Image (cartoon, rainbow, N blue to C red; front, side):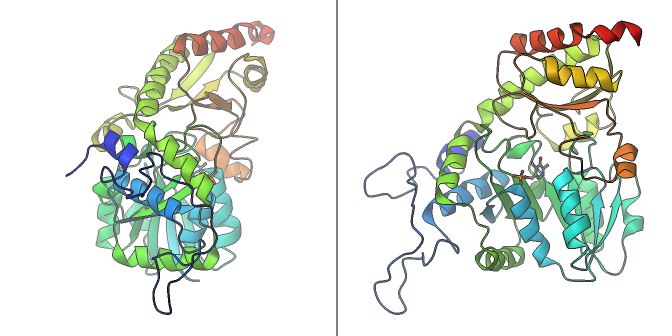
Length: 388
Ligand SMILES: *Cc1c(COP(=O)(O)O)cnc(C)c1O
């Protein structure tokens, strides 16, 4: 029986799945480090929780089914997932990556992967001729779409055609739209990564990360890596993410609806210079996003008239917290320049458009009227505005 997305969020790929003798509806937290064996050469399938744990296995099955992958691996954070993934490459390998990525990924590539001998071309994959950067030693393309924080849309099918022509692995960080709105494996990607901390968990309370693939070979390599490096997700955190995923479709719909209302409000404000959201009709990425995703999500970025106004807004809101992270039920305002993208070299940051007037917003599931009233209050209480 092929289940629909919302059902899979609750039951994984088959209902009455877990075969628990007690009939427990909530999948149990198997808080154990090790497992007893009946005799030499026999195993229950579980040997030691660094390798696998039943709660982690259940979560991995659910996430694999949501991305239509053959395997998903759950890590202790999104960065742990991407760090483990980099172990499939060798010194001398070259990767093409988008220049506008989550700041932590850029920090990893520039400071750790490069030290380990991996070479990079950081380019604008939504604008530049990606194929012209392919070299003899190129092994993969790594993208996000929409990108963090500038919301550039990259054409996944186009990247996949280039990757297939040159036998490269296409890796897509699908954190921003979540599997509810976008499934890169179906568009030709080989690997999807997620920060499960964000929309999958959805409550700003648990860190997690995923690598999902539809390749047997990559799955086998990643299974070896997770058991060797030991960065798998702990049972209780697996349970929290499993619980979060049950409401993923409801949260994605509601937060997207709120985001659209906020985009409209921002457009109506004369204190906002630019709004970056892929769902704006006629905007650069709109058609591509519409063709490869089922929605535009609830992440948006906007530029205000001055740094002083940006700082004022972060201080003046009475409801919306000024905090890093995204994808939770709480709306958050982030200042990329000093937070998520502080470690991105200044020239790259400026080339990407991340100035000190840019704010990123992750829209949650509160009542949209309260969110707009809060923003309006923050904007309207700015005294310096008249002098601009
Ligand atoms: C947050 C984030 C990450 C890193 O995930 P953590 O769970 O914070 O380690 C990676 N990619 C994107 C797009 C993110 O937003």
